[in-house]
Amino acid sequence: MNVLVCVKRVPATGGRIFLTADGLEIDTRHLGFTISPHEECAVEEAVRIVEAGGGSSSVLTLGPVEAEDQLREAMAIGIDRAVLLQTDGRDWDPLATASAIVDAIRSEEAENGPFDLILFGNESADSGGFQVGIRVAAALDRLCVTGVKSLKIGDGSVTARREATGGGWESFELPLPAVVGVKEGLNLPRYPSVPGRLRARKKEIARSTPEFRAGGLEKIALRLPQTETTAAEIIGRGADAAPAVVDLLTRIGVVGR
Image 1 (tube, rainbow, N blue to C red):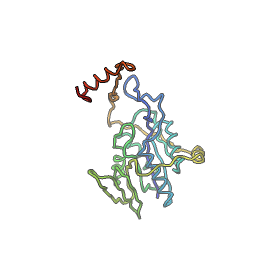
Image 2: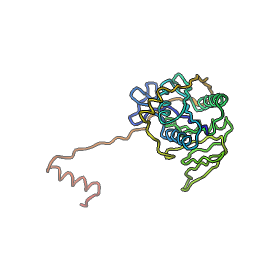
Image 3: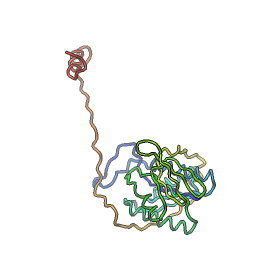
Image 4: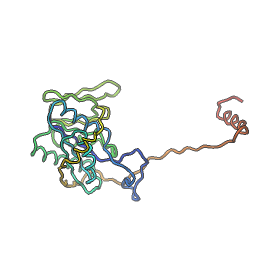
């Protein structure tokens, strides 16, 4: 089984997000970077598939040179090889991203043989476009299912299950090769070990520079969601506050007059 996982370098959003002065980018000076939880599960699933049935696993990302860190994290977990489609750091829309990935997959398959299974996260943690995996599958003329939380490899096929609207599960059996978009909950990703990190540091990363193809979405501006504010009012101190507390509770209807 030859498995490819496609991931994206995204800001770690545990902290507060700020925008650049022009409102077109996230200010990443004080942010770390990672891949989305969906993609972490995709990486883990690829490693498990190869561990169980043999074969090889690869991880691919499109991004700046710094995205090498995310590729090495995947290799530290157990992915065999990595491919970086190196950009100048500007934002690529889903059309341009999918086109670059398709070109890279065709090149990889011509050199190393076809990928039986290509895994994507259901959507990226930053833009959440839900498009790239589906666009890649359409361009490669391969069946695709998204929102998957269970995978079972069969003889020349893969069974994918996802939660159905209103409860229950939907099951799909796809002949290989296929493209699958997975969601968090598919598995419990492992942490990279120290020996794994050391091995990953020594591995070569295949690199190429993709051509940006215009014609997709154009970003006009980013907008932060409105933040909720709370306020506290001190209505008194010590025993002198008791009448004020009673009056407040009366006004909001907690106690009767």
